[in-house]
Length: 278
Image 1 (cartoon, rainbow, N blue to C red):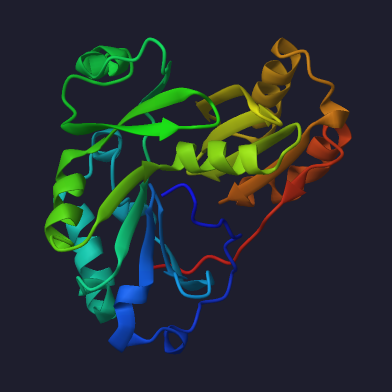
Image 2 (image 1 turned 135 degrees about the vertical axis):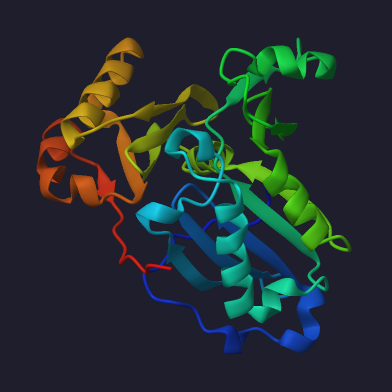
């Protein structure tokens, strides 16, 4: 699963005409369903091309997943949104894909060294970050680079919904934070990968083959984010001018404040995209 290539999300929609609907067995379906976004991509196993199909934003009254309790949104809204997406994209209902990879939002995760990891302690690893009212499915992801296991949780209903939808496919789940860590390792230098969404951001910092830091933060302003980032860098004793920082996701809050980041992190890159509202 970790071997599929990474690409940057493009603002424009992809063209489904590039996908041979009669030979879906040669494609891997890549779905990223986060707190406010839903991305669809197709990976062609024959030529290793990745085709972006669509990039949707949910409006403020229809946050799709994971954090329903925080916004007092009934879980059924999650599946109403999914139903609309799958109606508008009929090919998504096929069970003929060679595999389906679901990237999910998970604020609850814990990296445990392989040398001490015990599967029977999964619940204990996550107890500090899980609320008592959340129904979650606990699962793990193996990190070859970091010599660790990522224990994380996702919505139990969402987990079962996708397993039922793709009952005859090989389905893999992975948290967004894991994709950031993998991308950071692939950079092969001192770097920070940051994904922003809905006034929260995930961060992974690596130095060649060593994971230095990973976590999630909530923030209100771009200055808040800068403060958190500077605190992390200071604790790691990293020279900010030597840290390559890559910002992705919904970075609109930073658009007018990016110069302040460049003052401290001159090699920062901000990837922007247009919002397509569902």
